[in-house]
Length: 260
Ligand SMILES: [Zn+2]
Image 1 (tube, protein in one colour):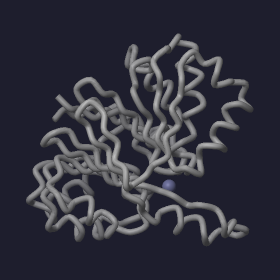
Image 2 (cartoon, helix red, strand yellow):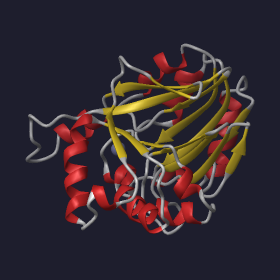
Image 3 (cartoon, helix red, strand yellow):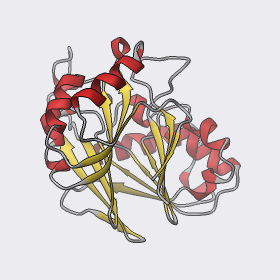
């Protein structure tokens, strides 16, 4: 039975109540970690042997709240005696800097006790393991957030992705962080079991407009902006009212587990 464990549901703003984005996806024999915001390794430790069992880490983009927990995860896996190879899927431009960071933290990859397969996202080549397909879809989130910054490097790559994860009839879409709500449209052109959608960079109204015609069973709202997080019940009831065709609208908290 597929399940989602929401380890961190917060936005990019530090909070003692909501950690940075990290979701554990269970699909039959596969264990996938979607984003690895801090303090993911601490939260995974509470789930028994899962640090040794995770098959792959899927990083939607290189903002620190989505990728910052990777070095501590690797150190934790080493200290727990992990031997199982680990795949890390991420934007191409993050691979060399992340490997250099890990090396600078006195974690030589050859000494971890397990191999790491560094795999750049390629929207033209969906991943396929154990009957599960993961398809990345590029979005404009990083372009939008980064290019306007003072002293931004105009030559810097800005790859960011949404993800569709499919196994049989179960279809799970992670929005990642978005530039605008219309980026969801191609992801929802097929029926989806669940959409895990951020609400820091798009508004509830924009999302509702995009979902009006979607064939979607469950909507999980995460990464809520500071102005939305204060009144979650109001947000939930508003979305339920606007989107009556969706069976379940949920606002998971850190630690929430949803079985499908
Ligand atoms: Zn971001």
